[in-house]
Image (cartoon, rainbow, N blue to C red; front, side, top):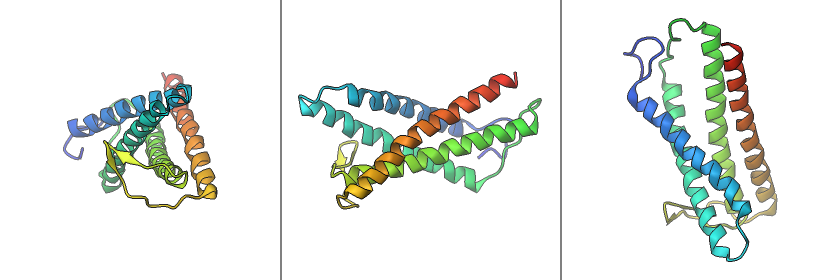
Length: 167
């Protein structure tokens, strides 16, 4: 999408997509922290937060899928003027790792939800059950889903620390 732009520039659609992923993910992170802090009674409170978590998570997953497709399709952007090519390549590698992590986290979240017997819905529309209930799959999906959440926080921290070091 950026083949017609100057080095270091991206078009407004890519910028909007990135901002949308960031905004939805930020609220998803808030929702993730709010779920365990919500009292168990009444049960509806957690169910609403969980349904919202599925909607936000699958929204991030869908937008990241589009972004990964654009990445794969090319073209490869040029670094901005004054930024060393190695620094630009590192930044893009971290971004790709973050996008891939979001993608896999979404898949593992769906595996966890279905295997735990939860109905998965997006914007109020229930999705068909794709995976039967299974304690083994629940544990596999749940552990990976949680671990990847910490992994992308580490990626962001690495990205920020290297950026500050290069200043």
